[in-house]
Image (cartoon, rainbow, N blue to C red; front, side, top):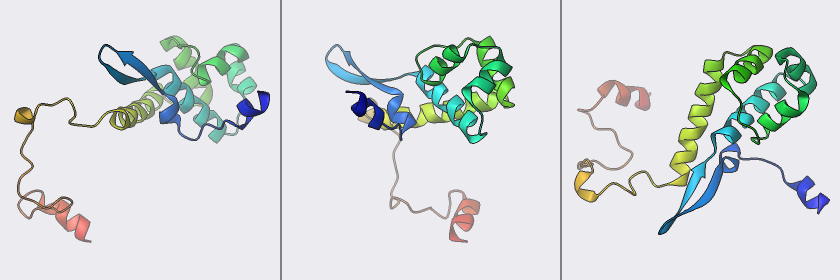
Length: 147
């Protein structure tokens, strides 16, 4: 059993933050903010070559608690997040922006974009070929793509 746990490597933080739940009548996927946040904090710390001990000391947070936050097992308060970000030398806004981006990707992967929108409420796609850019719409974008 220990070997099986040891060989599990988290390659996809988005997949790790998505949990299947049962809703009446259908299965949904719930995205856990605490796991995505933990992944972002760990990635920043590792990228800086810092240990949990270093960051926990600077942030004045117990090593065990910081570890649980990074593993997505604990919900960190805004004060704690600010302290951890300060210890990492990264603005909280940057961390939250990265978490937001990861969250958006997870949401897109968890459900088709137009799955719950009735056909009559969808905007018409027009007569264009998918992937092509019309001359009349955003000509500057077309020029950038062509370059």
